[in-house]
Image 1 (cartoon, rainbow, N blue to C red):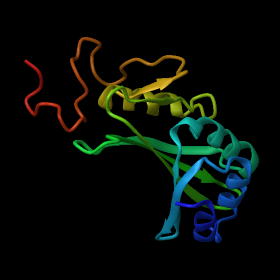
Image 2 (image 1 turned 90 degrees about the horizontal axis):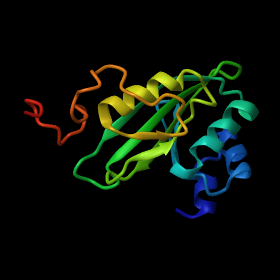
Image 3 (image 1 turned 180 degrees about the vertical axis):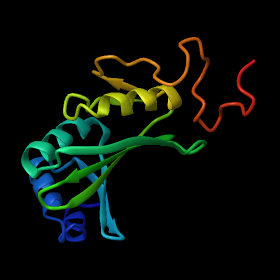
Length: 160
């Protein structure tokens, strides 16, 4: 999508224009559905985008973070962040698509402390690594568990 087309599409969202001014190549796509905005973010830009949204646009709360496995499609995984700005009562969803070969993305736990356990859960269940995470280890399953059970190619009966 061309930058001019994206600017027209996001005309109603001031945070989108601020983000485009901050980092023009960060937003790949975006739109609004049922009053909630979603931005597709370039994965390499997720940490700077989150830092900007928190410090400059008031998104001080990471409500949750999760992942989706789109197997067998590629890019296979999508990491999703739900943000909240208390001042403007605005919710914002950020999505990053990452490949399935060696799924990894920068950690945002330095931006929001709550991301620490969300990222550990995603790592545990999907096997997505968060670069720069202070303590990336399993949180739900035992350390001896094989595989990541929320992956679509994980055997229903588990590994034997």
